[in-house]
Image (cartoon, rainbow, N blue to C red; front, side, top):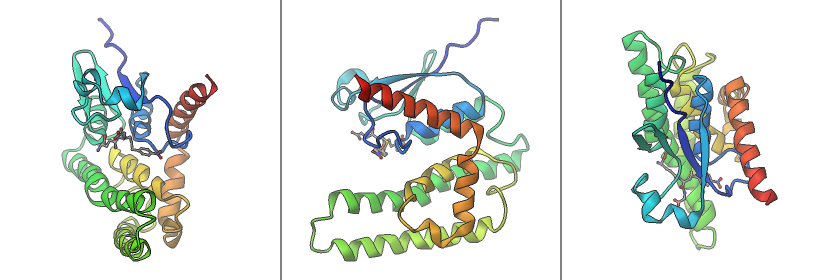
Length: 220
Ligand SMILES: N[C@@H](CCC(=O)N[C@@H](CSCc1ccc([N+](=O)[O-])cc1)C(=O)NCC(=O)O)C(=O)O
């Protein structure tokens, strides 16, 4: 039986996150490690991302992309779903539990991530505006609302809905972006959820791989 080719993901040539695993290739690396699927990473410079060759893979000129044989995907939610749908370990087999885990994938990237990205936009692009403080306060209140709802749902459970799933993976990866903001500290159970996720061997392997990739890039 011919083995399937290793997937190839595209990553920042030199990630601005200084190897902290905040760029979105991290969630794809993590998913591949959770299902035990070896992969290759190909670096793309900021300039090359916007060239036709890369836009043929990613219409918006971004990373990551995911190539496997004659399949090419962009959009990390879709990539993680593809991995979880093709390999055991990230979605339950039971139909209703599987559907609920997929719902949490959508919640992570459609309900929780946008308000967290808004905060980053305020911090990185609007800091010099006269209305910066007020806007930051408004955006952080919106994040607090989502975290309060998420914390109430999680309660004292380990994961969002029974077994660890791709829904937990994406939710934890989104919440990691709040590290250092103080916003997660208001919910000890969410802090523990992220720490539990980051303690997973698959996360550690993914983090180590992206960190090594960054270090190799800055060492040349
Ligand atoms: N919705 C898309 C979003 C993809 C995306 O935002 N890609 C970013 C990298 S991950 C976002 C990101 C970037 C940097 C940090 N950081 O901490 O430095 C964290 C996250 C990108 O290619 N940016 C370059 C560009 O748009 O020209 C998906 O989930 O795949």
